Image 1 (cartoon, rainbow, N blue to C red):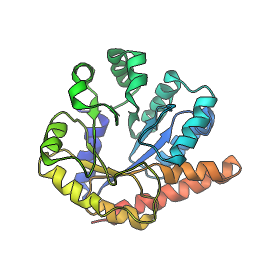
Image 2: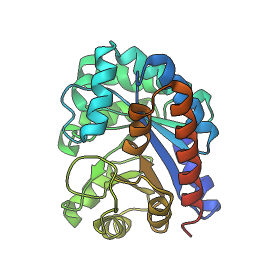
Image 3: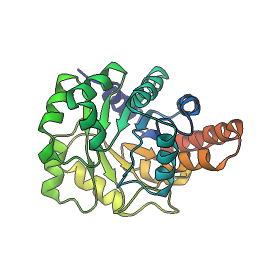
Image 4: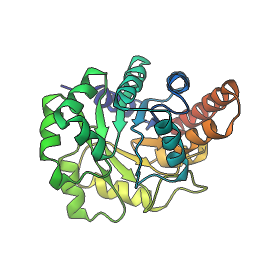
Amino acid sequence: MSTALDDLFVKVRSENRAALIAYIPAGFPSKKACARAIAVLADAGVDAIEIGFPYSDPIMDGPTIQEAAEIAIKAGTNAADVLTALQTASDAGVAAVVMTYWNPVEKYGVDEFAKAIAAHGGSGVITPDLTIEESEHWLAATLTHAINPIYVVAPSTSDARLAQVAARTGGFVYAASVMGVTGARTTVSGDAAALVSRVRAVTSLPVCVGLGVSTREQAKSVAAYADGVIVGSAFIKILLTNEGEEIAMNALSLLAKELAAGVREGR
């Protein structure tokens, strides 16, 4: 059984382009504004949305995402809100996944979390701090509930390790393009293309690049070699820095349209 995420990659490959994947933490900038931002992103041409599970110790996230997560946590965002945001994204007609550190999943209940993801229209879960060695229970749960277990690889990951991780991954392999934390950058690391090429040598799964894309030109350059372009900090920065919801949503729409155009120009 294929998920909406699997179907998306069949579609974009048939169109000879990369997918544009947006990241937004649940409950940010507020629960109501988060739902509106999801709708704006979907309307502007984003293909898939990652809903972030706000967490107090986000080791992979840079200052922009950390600030957004803190705002969401202070507002009381919890697992139920994450699942509501996931359903909102799915209902907007885009493939939807959750990105979460492992502790909240364990707290919720591993099998229960996988079941809830599927029940709210989710295609899978990205787990940046879960190793494949500790994944037996999680992989069984994702199989039972037909969702994609998505793992993260980095430029430092060895070829042997890439093969092992890819063999347990579903949906797509998340290629972190730089060593370090997330955040929009003026240039996207040259390591990204090399990493995608190395992942492609060990799996036929789509490979999506995250960490750093913030402009149409960057989206275009990454879309030339990756199956998906993941953008988070650039969208979040707009919601953090624009005063007034209307101005922020208009700016969000504009950037999403620019990035959607960029991924279509990549090939």
